[in-house]
Length: 146
Image (cartoon, rainbow, N blue to C red):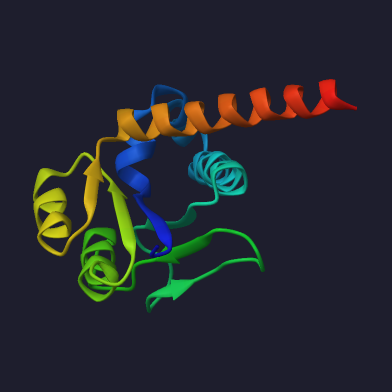
């Protein structure tokens, strides 16, 4: 079975989830940190590898990830997160099981054309909540066995 990856359009999520949009209005970094934390928890509990892509940060495309953590990409000057996500889907869509989370319909169409499954940001929230609930159930089951 191919490795499973979730690629997330960060700003699509931030601006569609009310709690993250409120944080973004206060301070952009708070919203980014909250999203990265939620996605890291998802990766840790689901086994799905996560890549999150933000618009802009410096002069060139970069990635900042901790060992064992999610991959965080920033689009470079003159490109958007959509460009990065589409390039990732084009490069890895046939090799891995990809899911792309965005509300951008054009981006969804492009990613799907490269073999990715696309989900809305609301569906992403459901996926994260489901993984958290599954993990909690498994943890309770494990504690009862002790």
